[in-house]
Length: 544
Image 1 (tube, rainbow, N blue to C red):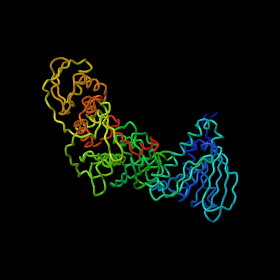
Image 2: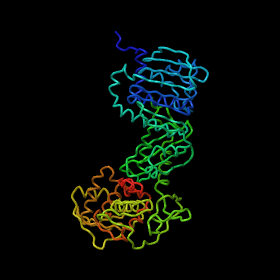
Image 3: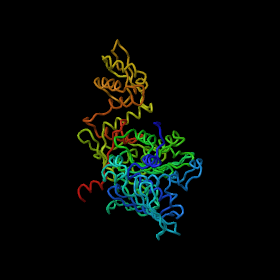
Image 4: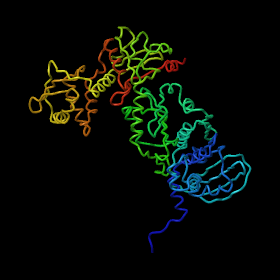
């Protein structure tokens, strides 16, 4: 008796559906995309029990003609493509004709639709058409999905709580609202309103509705077009200081997960403790993007991925970090720090080109800076105050100076002799060339005994910190030959420490140097350098 057999069409259908429909959010993704593809201007969504009991989508789109309704629910029934070559030029969300067929395999499906000429109602249960009838209804479609996975108890038990499934759907729908601001969206669950968004003229207008007023102040627009690609949207400033409520990538309006681009953003922000908020749209010709690499179509592949990563990285560095300070009284921008006119500290509200430079004049001795617990520097700005961690601020200054090669080595008046352990001596031998390149030079005295002869100008370090440098270098493992990692160690061990008292002049000098850095907002290890507190935040805390 043959052991290998052909699976029945019913089993094949359920297996294939399991690749597309994983949870209620999968149903919602397919239905909302169909409504958008139908050129709807309003989409109403109703859920029950986080979508586990009911998912309903009502739109005012083109609808489906009566003769096409039964074809639309067949697997691979689609109006989007005719040949395999058409996939190269996809401009719609759907194209494979799997969505409705997959949903019908694992739930009860009810469709009411009209193309403006004739209305049709179709009912399906577990992949089988139960009824088709002509009805009266306005142009558009209403699709209701109930009893999801009731015929597949193994899949049903993997669904999470209604609240969790609801949050996943809310995050999904919010993404479509951002990339389609001209469509009105209304989302509710068991009569509880989750989203209520009329049509807007731009992504900016819609984003302002979806984020708090205080969060909006931290968002910076980005808009760059180079070669075949255009990248535009918003990213948060590095000093946001909180976990973002959401982040989205869109490629040709398709919400996608793109780990390589996400890592590029984190690298550009130098791996911050909290990732940035971003809403980024990447536009290109359809043939530059492969949208057919995953059944759910939420993963794509850009053909020239490296090029896009480079554009994105440079755009972030230029738009987010290279904000040169300036005072422009003609535009009504008063000095940010009361009583201080040094442009190098002014960072708010003005973006200027790389060719512009900040003028610098010495700060006056004043009471406009305060040191808290000999660790934090407080400064007043026109919108509130900023708090600077003096250790990580100095760490950032030293790191960038080392990486730019702007710090010359200076000979020590009193060289420091060190007796190294075998592990420390091994770390010294492996990193000696990079240390010398960064301005830290030693002379070997005898076996495992070295003499620190030179340090980068402007830094100071004691014997214990030098030993700690070698311990930190040894802990780098495979990164011990990475210049940036060695520079991070040097910057950390030679910077001003927490608890060290600073004079007014030293605080002013540190702040001045910090805001001359390319990235003044995070230390080389990703920790925040600056925390900003607006007057509105303070007023809210005091109940004003």
